[in-house]
Image (cartoon, rainbow, N blue to C red; front, side, top):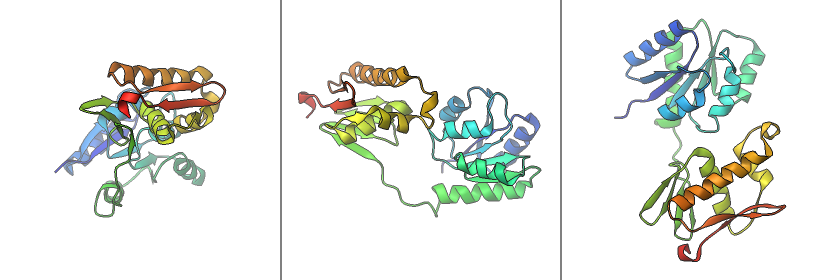
Length: 234
Protein backbone atom coordinates (compact mmCIF):
# COMPACT_ATOMS: atom_id res chain seq x y z
CA UNK A 1 0.00 0.00 0.00
CA UNK A 2 1.37 3.43 -0.99
CA UNK A 3 2.42 5.69 1.87
CA UNK A 4 0.86 9.12 1.94
CA UNK A 5 3.41 11.83 1.16
CA UNK A 6 3.48 15.03 3.23
CA UNK A 7 5.45 18.13 2.23
CA UNK A 8 6.44 20.47 5.08
CA UNK A 9 7.15 24.14 4.31
CA UNK A 10 8.51 25.57 7.57
CA UNK A 11 11.62 27.76 7.93
CA UNK A 12 12.14 26.95 11.62
CA UNK A 13 14.30 23.85 11.16
CA UNK A 14 13.67 22.57 14.68
CA UNK A 15 9.89 22.64 14.23
CA UNK A 16 10.16 21.20 10.71
CA UNK A 17 12.32 18.26 11.82
CA UNK A 18 10.17 17.53 14.88
CA UNK A 19 7.09 17.46 12.66
CA UNK A 20 8.84 15.28 10.10
CA UNK A 21 10.08 12.81 12.74
CA UNK A 22 6.61 12.56 14.28
CA UNK A 23 4.93 11.96 10.93
CA UNK A 24 7.48 9.33 9.92
CA UNK A 25 6.68 7.43 13.11
CA UNK A 26 3.14 7.15 11.79
CA UNK A 27 4.38 5.75 8.47
CA UNK A 28 4.04 8.91 6.40
CA UNK A 29 6.63 9.71 3.75
CA UNK A 30 7.88 13.21 4.48
CA UNK A 31 9.90 15.88 2.63
CA UNK A 32 10.94 19.20 4.18
CA UNK A 33 11.37 22.29 1.98
CA UNK A 34 15.04 23.18 1.48
CA UNK A 35 15.08 26.17 -0.90
CA UNK A 36 12.46 28.78 -0.01
CA UNK A 37 12.76 30.38 -3.44
CA UNK A 38 11.88 27.09 -5.16
CA UNK A 39 8.93 25.83 -3.11
CA UNK A 40 6.73 25.10 -6.14
CA UNK A 41 9.47 23.14 -7.92
CA UNK A 42 10.27 21.07 -4.82
CA UNK A 43 6.57 20.36 -4.31
CA UNK A 44 6.08 19.31 -7.93
CA UNK A 45 9.05 16.95 -7.68
CA UNK A 46 7.78 15.33 -4.45
CA UNK A 47 4.12 15.21 -5.55
CA UNK A 48 2.62 15.23 -2.02
CA UNK A 49 -0.80 14.06 -0.88
CA UNK A 50 -0.90 16.88 1.71
CA UNK A 51 1.08 20.07 2.44
CA UNK A 52 1.81 21.72 5.80
CA UNK A 53 2.55 25.39 5.13
CA UNK A 54 3.81 28.16 7.41
CA UNK A 55 2.85 31.80 6.75
CA UNK A 56 6.03 33.62 7.77
CA UNK A 57 8.63 32.47 5.26
CA UNK A 58 11.72 34.02 3.64
CA UNK A 59 11.21 36.10 0.45
CA UNK A 60 7.50 35.29 -0.07
CA UNK A 61 4.91 34.43 2.55
CA UNK A 62 2.77 31.31 2.76
CA UNK A 63 -0.23 33.01 1.13
CA UNK A 64 1.85 33.64 -2.00
CA UNK A 65 3.14 30.07 -2.10
CA UNK A 66 -0.33 28.64 -1.52
CA UNK A 67 -1.57 30.46 -4.63
CA UNK A 68 1.38 29.13 -6.63
CA UNK A 69 0.90 25.58 -5.37
CA UNK A 70 -2.78 25.67 -6.27
CA UNK A 71 -1.78 25.97 -9.93
CA UNK A 72 -0.22 22.50 -9.77
CA UNK A 73 -2.05 20.52 -7.07
CA UNK A 74 -5.49 20.10 -5.53
CA UNK A 75 -4.18 18.23 -2.48
CA UNK A 76 -5.10 19.53 1.01
CA UNK A 77 -2.99 22.48 2.21
CA UNK A 78 -2.96 23.02 5.98
CA UNK A 79 -1.53 26.29 7.27
CA UNK A 80 0.50 26.09 10.48
CA UNK A 81 1.28 29.49 11.97
CA UNK A 82 1.87 31.44 15.17
CA UNK A 83 -0.55 34.02 13.80
CA UNK A 84 -3.90 33.52 15.45
CA UNK A 85 -6.02 36.42 14.22
CA UNK A 86 -9.32 35.83 12.47
CA UNK A 87 -8.12 37.63 9.33
CA UNK A 88 -5.04 35.41 9.12
CA UNK A 89 -7.32 32.40 8.98
CA UNK A 90 -9.58 34.12 6.45
CA UNK A 91 -6.58 34.96 4.22
CA UNK A 92 -5.34 31.39 4.50
CA UNK A 93 -8.65 29.96 3.29
CA UNK A 94 -9.19 32.60 0.62
CA UNK A 95 -5.73 31.98 -0.84
CA UNK A 96 -6.37 28.27 -1.32
CA UNK A 97 -5.80 26.70 2.09
CA UNK A 98 -8.03 23.99 3.51
CA UNK A 99 -7.39 24.34 7.25
CA UNK A 100 -5.49 26.42 9.83
CA UNK A 101 -3.53 25.15 12.84
CA UNK A 102 -2.24 27.66 15.38
CA UNK A 103 1.20 27.37 16.99
CA UNK A 104 2.02 26.16 19.55
CA UNK A 105 0.11 23.05 18.60
CA UNK A 106 -0.43 19.57 19.99
CA UNK A 107 0.86 16.85 17.70
CA UNK A 108 -2.31 14.85 18.29
CA UNK A 109 -4.35 17.71 16.81
CA UNK A 110 -2.05 17.97 13.79
CA UNK A 111 -2.20 14.22 13.21
CA UNK A 112 -6.00 14.16 13.56
CA UNK A 113 -6.41 16.96 11.01
CA UNK A 114 -3.99 15.30 8.61
CA UNK A 115 -5.87 11.99 8.84
CA UNK A 116 -9.20 13.75 8.37
CA UNK A 117 -8.12 15.61 5.23
CA UNK A 118 -6.44 12.55 3.74
CA UNK A 119 -9.60 10.47 4.30
CA UNK A 120 -11.71 13.10 2.55
CA UNK A 121 -9.31 13.46 -0.36
CA UNK A 122 -7.98 9.93 -0.83
CA UNK A 123 -9.73 7.57 1.59
CA UNK A 124 -13.17 6.22 2.27
CA UNK A 125 -14.79 9.67 2.21
CA UNK A 126 -13.23 10.70 -1.08
CA UNK A 127 -15.74 11.21 -3.91
CA UNK A 128 -15.37 8.90 -6.87
CA UNK A 129 -13.69 10.84 -9.64
CA UNK A 130 -13.56 9.99 -13.30
CA UNK A 131 -10.42 10.89 -15.17
CA UNK A 132 -10.59 14.00 -17.37
CA UNK A 133 -9.96 12.91 -20.94
CA UNK A 134 -10.14 15.11 -24.05
CA UNK A 135 -10.20 13.38 -27.46
CA UNK A 136 -9.64 15.22 -30.71
CA UNK A 137 -9.23 12.99 -33.74
CA UNK A 138 -6.60 10.37 -32.93
CA UNK A 139 -5.14 12.52 -30.14
CA UNK A 140 -6.09 11.87 -26.51
CA UNK A 141 -5.20 14.22 -23.65
CA UNK A 142 -5.12 12.75 -20.13
CA UNK A 143 -5.37 15.92 -18.04
CA UNK A 144 -4.62 14.47 -14.59
CA UNK A 145 -1.66 12.49 -15.92
CA UNK A 146 -0.45 15.52 -17.93
CA UNK A 147 0.09 13.31 -20.98
CA UNK A 148 -0.93 13.54 -24.63
CA UNK A 149 -1.23 10.27 -26.54
CA UNK A 150 -0.94 9.87 -30.29
CA UNK A 151 -1.03 6.23 -31.31
CA UNK A 152 1.75 4.54 -29.33
CA UNK A 153 3.48 7.86 -28.61
CA UNK A 154 3.11 9.38 -25.14
CA UNK A 155 3.97 13.07 -24.84
CA UNK A 156 4.76 14.24 -21.27
CA UNK A 157 3.47 17.74 -20.55
CA UNK A 158 4.23 20.50 -18.09
CA UNK A 159 1.29 21.95 -16.12
CA UNK A 160 0.80 25.04 -18.29
CA UNK A 161 1.26 23.06 -21.50
CA UNK A 162 -1.49 20.71 -20.36
CA UNK A 163 -3.87 23.58 -19.48
CA UNK A 164 -3.33 25.19 -22.90
CA UNK A 165 -3.95 21.95 -24.78
CA UNK A 166 -7.00 21.06 -22.72
CA UNK A 167 -8.64 24.43 -23.40
CA UNK A 168 -7.81 24.44 -27.11
CA UNK A 169 -8.66 20.78 -27.79
CA UNK A 170 -12.00 21.03 -25.96
CA UNK A 171 -12.93 24.14 -27.98
CA UNK A 172 -11.60 22.96 -31.38
CA UNK A 173 -12.20 24.09 -34.05
CA UNK A 174 -13.36 27.26 -32.26
CA UNK A 175 -10.98 30.02 -31.22
CA UNK A 176 -10.04 30.44 -27.54
CA UNK A 177 -9.40 34.06 -26.60
CA UNK A 178 -6.14 35.26 -25.09
CA UNK A 179 -8.13 36.51 -22.09
CA UNK A 180 -9.56 33.03 -21.40
CA UNK A 181 -6.12 31.43 -21.60
CA UNK A 182 -4.59 34.08 -19.34
CA UNK A 183 -7.35 33.64 -16.74
CA UNK A 184 -6.83 29.87 -16.62
CA UNK A 185 -3.03 30.01 -16.61
CA UNK A 186 -2.43 32.80 -14.11
CA UNK A 187 -4.50 33.98 -11.14
CA UNK A 188 -3.28 37.57 -11.37
CA UNK A 189 -3.03 38.69 -14.99
CA UNK A 190 -1.81 42.17 -14.03
CA UNK A 191 1.65 40.74 -13.30
CA UNK A 192 1.89 38.68 -16.50
CA UNK A 193 3.99 40.10 -19.32
CA UNK A 194 2.08 40.21 -22.64
CA UNK A 195 4.72 38.06 -24.31
CA UNK A 196 4.54 35.31 -21.66
CA UNK A 197 1.49 33.64 -23.23
CA UNK A 198 3.18 33.71 -26.65
CA UNK A 199 6.22 31.96 -25.16
CA UNK A 200 4.05 29.24 -23.59
CA UNK A 201 2.12 28.68 -26.84
CA UNK A 202 5.45 28.40 -28.69
CA UNK A 203 6.60 25.75 -26.20
CA UNK A 204 3.47 23.67 -26.84
CA UNK A 205 3.97 23.93 -30.61
CA UNK A 206 7.59 22.81 -30.23
CA UNK A 207 6.58 19.93 -27.94
CA UNK A 208 4.08 18.68 -30.55
CA UNK A 209 6.64 18.98 -33.34
CA UNK A 210 9.35 17.24 -31.30
CA UNK A 211 7.09 14.20 -30.97
CA UNK A 212 6.12 14.25 -34.68
CA UNK A 213 2.54 15.32 -34.01
CA UNK A 214 1.32 17.19 -37.07
CA UNK A 215 -1.62 18.96 -35.43
CA UNK A 216 -0.70 22.42 -34.19
CA UNK A 217 -1.92 25.72 -32.75
CA UNK A 218 -2.80 28.59 -35.05
CA UNK A 219 -2.71 32.23 -34.01
CA UNK A 220 -5.91 34.07 -34.97
CA UNK A 221 -4.82 37.69 -35.03
CA UNK A 222 -6.85 39.91 -32.74
CA UNK A 223 -8.86 36.98 -31.37
CA UNK A 224 -6.72 34.27 -29.79
CA UNK A 225 -5.63 30.73 -30.66
CA UNK A 226 -7.17 27.67 -32.32
CA UNK A 227 -6.19 24.00 -32.24
CA UNK A 228 -5.87 22.74 -35.83
CA UNK A 229 -6.16 18.97 -36.29
CA UNK A 230 -3.95 17.61 -39.06
CA UNK A 231 -5.66 15.59 -41.80
CA UNK A 232 -3.47 12.59 -40.93
CA UNK A 233 -4.70 12.72 -37.31
CA UNK A 234 -8.43 13.10 -37.94
